[in-house]
Length: 230
Image (cartoon, rainbow, N blue to C red; front, side, top):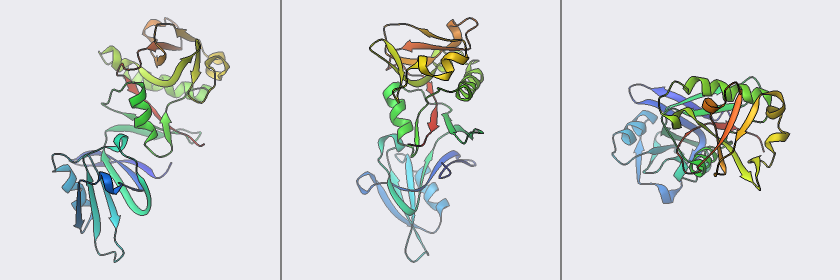
């Protein structure tokens, strides 16, 4: 996942950079020829409609093609191109665990289930988080503990990539929650409700280490993007 980075460009804030990706022509709002990546970034950040950009190195290497789009990565299908960079303003926590898995937690974005799935899947090599192992449970709880001081209920929740299928909680890859290490190793409970999508919500769990609560799929909550290998 080394082609994904979260960088800080003061005073512009955090920027997600994806190497070797570019915006498709149909989604380009404006095309500019510039001398530097900085010029392209400033062209986007000062444009009222620009949400993302691509910088493409020209054949003569003396100039750069700057592609501006009014859409963000969740609305785009990015093309693979070796000499390109995709950039989008995105404030997020981003790190790598000891097992090599990368995690990205947007700082101020709340989404429903399908929107969160789309947001994560449009970042190359990522998905909405699946937490089956004991080490992944540690990560999930650590993120939750960091956010639990938020006053709003939906900010304390963390949306995960799990749904009810015929009354059985299944991770998106088809694994039953009860067949996951997280279920046998931790005090792991499921709070049933009339919904099919799940969040981590320990506010009802008492001494539960992990408590997954069925919540409305459209309810906007925090979420975790997780790298994976097919």
